[in-house]
Amino acid sequence: MSTPKKKTPAVSISKCVIGQKVRLRSGKIATLEKVVTDYVYPYLMRHRDGGQTSNRKNGRYWKSGRDSKDDIVAFLPLPPKKAAKAKPSTLRAEQQKIIRRVLKLLKGLL
Image (tube, rainbow, N blue to C red; front, top):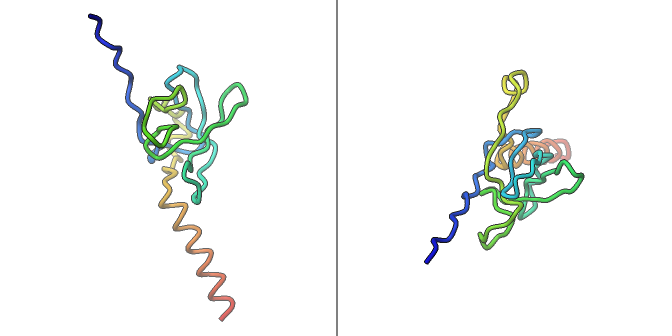
């Protein structure tokens, strides 16, 4: 009896930086393009072939957690200049920006 091949687990994208490249389960490379705070799958990935997918914070493509060729399995290192300027693109940071904008708008209305 053969042992089933163990797949690489997906990795959390919460510390990924916009513009950072990642390796997908399929072996392809994608780039974190942007974070959209009000999406269930907020991390939008641009593939080298021009395709686009979105992933959950845990790096998974499917909500159920089943394996997909579009799961993120590794981060590729940033070039030194980008690494020095990099700020994690966390969902919380994006939400805080939106809250600050709304409060500023409300303050202007009062």
